[in-house]
Image (cartoon, rainbow, N blue to C red):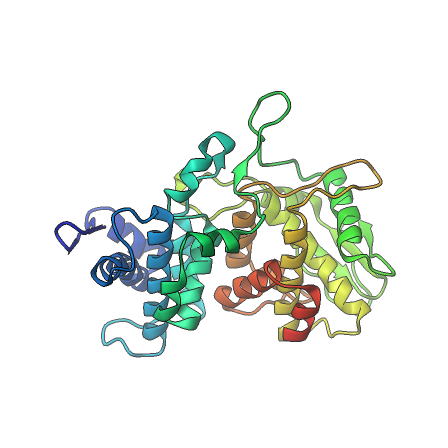
Length: 353
């Protein structure tokens, strides 16, 4: 932590540092210290002060940590090395493990008093890594709120007065509803079919858990595997976020492959994986809004769902993979492509990737 009254950095050598080293590597500790040093930069430069919202200070510090990580990755540090593949993946894992808890509507005021969601934190980190420390000075409450847009940030309240659960069972009905919702979002001329068992595809390999077959324009799923993937992770266990949207974002990514196939795009090129992640982000952003479906069902994202998608992109990367499940090694790049979709358009995804 950084104490501005004493202009001093302090750290826990007994628990936090050895735990971080064990799970996320030496570089993650350097990045943690860079985050705290970012607070010193804030106070020393006048960028932030005592009355600055906590979320602004923390997002700026994440951004400064990203700028430092880029400096290390470019080989400038005499003490640390950081690869942009596994090394950066582990740093990002450390960053989002220390995400805020999912809040309820009654706790909405706390949105300005934390470090941010996993998506918040990785977004700020990527801003610094990509654009440098200068970009961090542009982070304020307005910028954060604009970046969050209309994504759900707190769990709502049901008509019964109970807090919205935030998680749903991933079963056949949920998958069918998701497919109908994606038909509305992408409105393709020939929507893909659905098989509730993983099927072989003539002339094409299958991807695990959920697969798209261009030969018959069908998405097939391994429902038990998706259900295992959708088991909610407990943040208090300091693990990466996982839940229903880890599975649903994967199925969505297979639908994204069908959109690319209809446009004649290759489905097995490295850029396919990033285009798939971007289109998945497009769909996920649309799922934040209530959409009327012919079957009368409702499927909307809840607070915490974006973090579950980010967790899946970092751990298995399947939502950013080609038709056979191959993905790019850098989780940073997978998440960046997903974020491009969250804040962009379908045409921008297809043009950029």
